[in-house]
Length: 436
Image: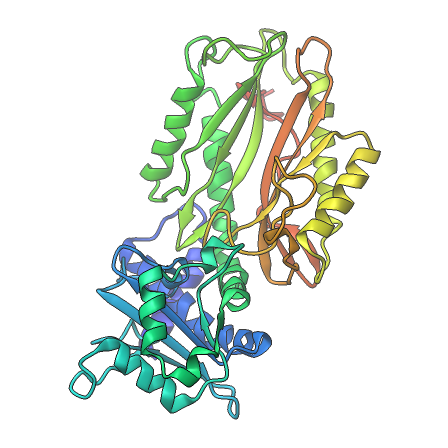
C-alpha cells in the first residue's frame, strides 16, 4: 500500500511540474504504476471486447516484440533470455490471470509460473499452462498491417506451435485487434502527464526558433537541428527521431545552402520521449527583415489556412469511422475551400507513429490499405499532421504550412492536449506590450 501511495504521489507530481524532469528512480515508480493501472483497468475489457481469452507474448533478449516492451517493468530494459508472458481471461469471473513462463516474476504485475523441476523445457511448461486453462482462442502477435502487433519472430512462432497440443494449434489467432487496443488506448493517468510533455516540446521549439539560437546570416538549419537534439537530451528527455529544420525562401525553388537569412520561413519537426510516451510536433517561424515587426500578411494568411484545415480534419472524427473515411471527408472539404490539403495524421502514444487508424500518408491521399481501414475509438491520441499550400507572389513554389500538434479523442470530441500554434513565431521576438 505504501508503494502504491508513493507511486501515486509521484504521478501527481509529474503532472504538475511542467518544467521538471523527475530523477530516474521516480520515473521508474511512475512507469510501473501506469503499467499496473493498465493491466488492472484496461486489459480485462479489451480481451472481452475482442473475444480473446488467452494472449501469449514472446520475445528473446534484444529482439523484443514492440508490445512486450510496453509490458516490462521500468527496471527491465530488455527481455531476459526468452521471456514468455501469458494472459488468460476467465470467462466466468472476467478476471485476467497474468503469468510469466520465467524463472522469476516480471515486476510486481506478472507472476512467475514455471516449475522448472517438473518442466525443464520452457515450451513444455507453457503448453501445460495452456492445457490447464483450455482457451478457445490463443492470440499471438502476428499482423499484416501493424508492425507494432507483428512482434513474434519466426523461430518462436514455429517452436510455440510445435509445443502446443494438437487440438490447440487450430485455436491460434492473430492478436492484432487486442494488441492495437492495448497500444493505442490512453489512461486518465497518462493523460495527466501528456500536457507536461507537450508544453516541454513547445518550449523547446520556442527557444530554438529565437534569437537565443539563431543569428541570421550565420546560423545554419543544421546548427538548429543539432541544437534541438542536444537540448532535448540536456533537459533529461529522449527523442524517437532526429529533428529536422527546413527553410522556405522567397524567390527560390530551394534555398542555396543552409544559412538562415532574414525573410526565411522556418519549419521544425521534433518529438520527445518521456515516461514511455511520445510527442510529435511541427511548427513554423518567420525571420524578420530589418524594419519588420511582424510576418508579411500573405504568410500569416497562409498559416491561418493550415489552422482551418486542422479544424476541418478534427471535425470529422467519429468513433467507428475508419481512418480512410475521415481522410476522404476532410480532403473533400479542404479541396472545396481551396486549401490544397495534404493530410498524414497518425496515432501517438507508446510509439511516435503508433498503432491505430492511419489518416492518410503524404504519398497516399487516396487512403491507406489496412491501417487506414482501422476504426477510430475513444480514449486515443493522435498527431494531427497535415499541410496546406498557398500561392504567394515572389515564391517560386506554393508555400506549404506544415503543422502537427498532438490531440486527444474521447466522447467530448477532439482537443489539443497542449494547445496548438495559431500564429507564426518570430525571430527575433517582437517587443512585448510591457516592454513598449
